[in-house]
Length: 257
Image (cartoon, rainbow, N blue to C red; front, side, top):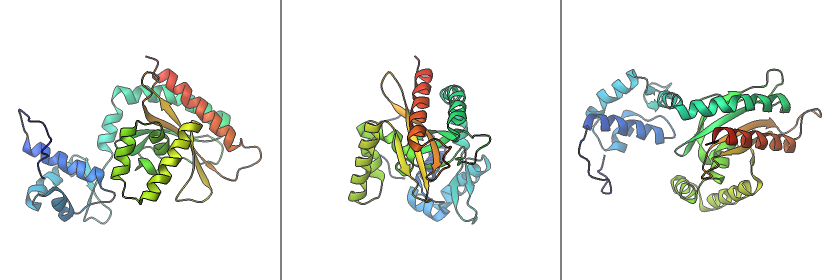
């Protein structure tokens, strides 16, 4: 990999470790599994340099072969290790009781998503025990601009993150302008309400969890609902109000200090 001219001088180096981290970062940014040839080209390293490193990373469970067997993809192992950090454990402990109450009152399932670079990752979910509803699995990842949770977080993020996300997104200028308009509306409304781009008849409603001290937002609480529901089911407007209230309560309890 070409040397970053802006990188600060370092006292120590560990070439083998850096090679492994380069592979992990490359696969993390990829939107699909990558073959050895693609990794070699992307990192500007020979296949011989990468062969043992790929084998070790796969053995340790950090990466794995795709279902076709000829390409590699990153696993959720590093994400799982991150969840063991106290901040994730703390917010999960605080959030779950509030999420359970939301499910009981609204009849809907919900999940909590964390921003990880330019993606969102679902770190905990709570399902309604009786009603038929939609749930998103823990560990589910999507690009930050491509989900209600991500757009909700992005709407309350600082301008530098918005700018970096848009710069990395290979979309037409008109599509980027449309996203910016939607983010402004989400911020003004205080929550996101977005129709699913993959499944017709489903809407995601997401509310931000905002740090009270600096207004930083790295988490969002989201529920996914059917557009057509029974008369006895709360309206989407009522569900939105409920999830905003729940997210605000989590914000106050988690960021109490």
